[in-house]
Length: 256
Image 1: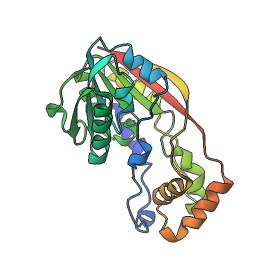
Image 2 (image 1 turned 135 degrees about the vertical axis):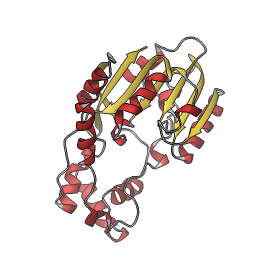
Image 3 (image 1 turned 30 degrees about the vertical axis):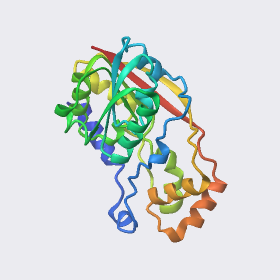
Image 4 (image 1 turned 90 degrees about the vertical axis):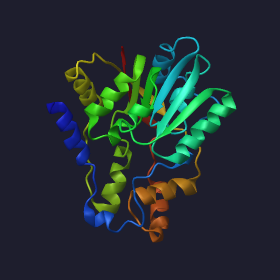
């Protein structure tokens, strides 16, 4: 489909020039577990509400790209069973530990979605938060989400690519302009072309991850492909440039 091809093309523009990657001391495509811990009190959000309202009593939730599992655990106690899928073992360890803490039935599956879909059970609700911008071949991914949901699929995604917040930093350190596509509306169009009648709600989310300034500097340094010798420069940049405290988010959902 044309829109799915446009999605893949738009995502490819977020790749980094090889000359920048060659200078990186480690991969900039990091997902530090410290950013994915589940808070003691999960805030109410449109995404959590749309998922929870579709879970029947003693139901189940399958969380794709689960991280620590906030999307699944937001549905507790209505949901009795949670499943987590992630390609990072550390994330699944966080997921399992949180499930044990909450005394919830759980199972974890290591691998990339949809490659491992045959090993993963269906659930009443499938959630997928902040993952789709990592997926170039989007149609098979969405098809697998749909086939694993008995009642509803809920996708949460930023209204811009998650690295868009670093647009000014890339310009400052590398004189590199960053793209503006793809967008949630493009994903909605892809779903429509697949015959899925999805809904969308736009909203604002407060960024409140509990990480230290030292961690924030280090994470940005890595993502900017800068050497450790530039830590002070990154720290100075962050001190002079306020980082966003609100993220514009979209919730997309559909029923089976």
